[in-house]
Image (cartoon, rainbow, N blue to C red; front, side, top):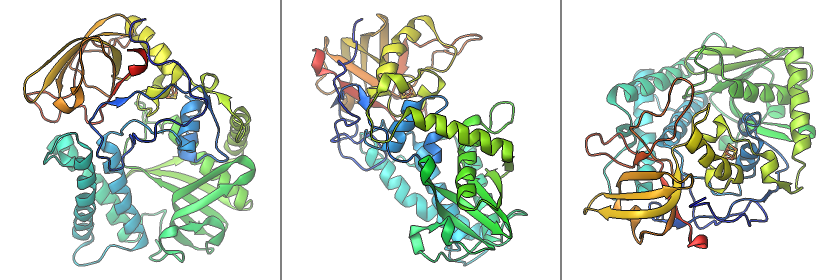
Length: 433
Ligand code: SF4
């Protein structure tokens, strides 16, 4: 197929570390990088965090790569920056680290503004052009206000002493910013960022909030993004994540009754009785048996092309995705397909501020990408093989029964500055030129 990505040659999960696609500051972001080789083998880590393990049902390779942290991921959407900033606000509110000068709401808003200064600086540093864009510009004013309202309400609730399930949030952590281990906690108090571990199950993680009372442990996961499916139930991967926390808590405190709560402003209980505990333990053991610590595993054996690919940061190096996506571009899929494309350039045109390219993609289709910032296409010529991850489209691509991959993508548009591929990553594949 035209534009098939580079041959599988990586013997481990390590790829070009000069390109950091995560949210760290990086002066090279925006420039075209060489496409890293596809993964062939991966080395599973000794432990998994509940958040990464939560996606293992959908794709175990994604869980391994997320936990192992040895592969540079694609850039995250600015929603991740906002989530981190919101989480910091909640952490400070729980720890009593917000300086009180006015009402709880005023103080929470002031603290969030302070946190966002640094978050905006990091965000701007990642954009490929000098820009005055800030995080709130990514969303409509209404959506941004809703997001902020929700996290301020959550923070105020913590500052004012918690909701009905959280009667006494602690102001001080004995270990400062490092966080406490569950085993360090007193018997009746509430704590933030509590380290938990179940060594025999290879689990380690940090719970947002742990509330202790006599014989009871409540684990509260504070979420600022979507946590429910369209039918209103807690999403399976979120429920799985919470139950893994529950399993760790029971390992450390076998006599305690454990309650699990997802809190996105609304408290949503995740059932965790003996049946759920046994089922979760069985699932963890079966999952871990597939990925022995330190033993190289064929990446293809763990990968599963499906809904988890949309939002996965390892698409550029995933052999299963790079193999299966072009088939889905041609014939459609039952699940969302990431807005990526790769293939051989047939045309490169540009005005001073925006460029347009055409390519024949890996499924043999003629594809157009408009509104590219010039930094993206520097040194691109017809005949080159290029890959673009995280584009946008205005083509209608979700039908009644199948998702269809568009033929027209964009990075930016002239009429809506929010309609932009904020997490775009572009690569050249010189190995096949
Ligand atoms: S791209 Fe898809 S198949 Fe590959 S690791 Fe990510 S979720 Fe799994």
